[in-house]
Every structure is written in structure tokens, then in C-alpha cells.
Amino acid sequence: MRNYYDDPVFFEKYSQMSRSAQGLAGAGEWPTLRQMLPDFSGKTVLDLGCGYGWHCLYAAEHGAKAVHGIDLSERMLATAREKVRQAGWEDRITLEKTAMEDYAYPAEAWDVVLSSLALHYVPDFAQICRQVYRTLKPGGTFVFSVEHPIFTAYGNQDWLYDEQGNILCWPVDRYFSEGCRDAVFLGETVEKQHKTLTTYLHSLLAAGFRLTDLREPEPPKELMHLPGMVDELRRPMMLLVSAEKPL
Image 1 (cartoon, rainbow, N blue to C red):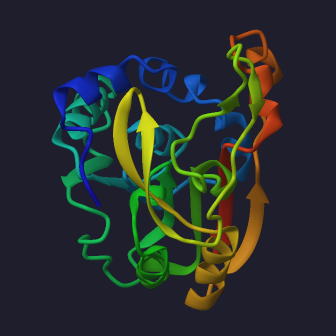
Image 2: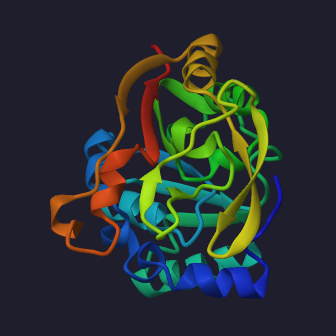
């Protein structure tokens, strides 16, 4: 898993995004994802690819007794540490610089594992599922968001346009050919790992999870006035999944 977020140019562009500046309120999928989250009261929480730490803060604010965020980017973690300090949650939230493939995943250590828009950078999702299953307590919850397979399949993650620059359609190609795609994100070329919907779901089931929810969130109505937002209804951009480790 490559670390793009410590590149100063890329990180500066990322910091200007609404989800960076406004937090969870600036993330279009948040209203849907929030409905899928478990009760955090008294729970221990692991956040894979925690970024700015928004989900860590949310879990602590809603009663989690211990939250641990991991991320590969030192710039992301520096921002997260400052936000944790400002919120006064140093006693509940810890942060660690490591790739999610390299994290120790201690057995039955966590009640909840979260991951927001990070797992589509990981080549081996099945391995992560096995590790998450190991580290969850019986009855624990795994909730994650990824870019939708329809969104990642073609690769460049842009519309097809006519000669006048009008949107024709969203391209889907090489859907069953999983693996690396060179996507353009924030004007920079970024490697992402395309996986089919079957791979996401079968990997969870093969690891022993019970699927509890799946959503393809539409843009919130209150954001439909923003430029280009109406076109977001023409194809799914994100996939949200919740699964449970049986008791």
C-alpha cells in the first residue's frame, strides 16, 4: 500500500476538500454511514486508515472507552493528533503510524473496527478480513466504506464526454480483472486496487463474518445544489458495508 498523503502537494490538495475542512459533515456518505454504526458506549474501537481522525473523535464523543487509529501517513497523523489534543481526548484516543497490512491485530482486542475510504488501496482485502475477524471480540462489528467497484473498474475515474464537453456516461470496463488502476485523484495519478463486489462480500463471508448491512449511498438532498452533484445520481461512487463476528 503506497503512501501518497505525505507528498506535500497532494496533501495540500486533500486538505482543501470539504471532508477535510468540514469533517464528517463535509462527507457526502456520512449520513448513511452514521446509520450503520453500532452503539459506541463503553466499546473499544480500531480505525484502519484513520486519516484526520474524524471517526476516532466521533467514537470517543459517543462513549467509546478506547479508540486506536492507525495510518501510514505522518502528515495525516499530525493533523489527527492536533484534533485529538484540541478535543481533549488524549486519554481515550491513541494513534499509530503503520500500514494496515502491518498492524499486529491482537486476538479479540476490539469491539468495533472501522475503515473509511482506505481499503480500496489495499491489494489483498481477504487478508485484511481475516485479520479483522481475529482482532474483533465475538459479537464485534466491522464497518467500512470503499469506492464502489463500478467507480473503480475502468481506472481513470472520470466521465466520458462528447465533443462539446457534455457528459455522456460513466465508463465500466475490465470489471472482472481485479488489481491496480491508475486513477486521477485531485489532479494526481494515484494507484488504487479494483475489486469486484463479489470479492468484497465473499472475503467477509469466507473469513467467518455475518453480513448485516450494505448501502450504495446517494448524495444528500441538501447538497444537490452543488455543481456536478446531480450527475452523482448516474452511478454509485461508494459502497458501505457492515458485518458482524458471531458470538
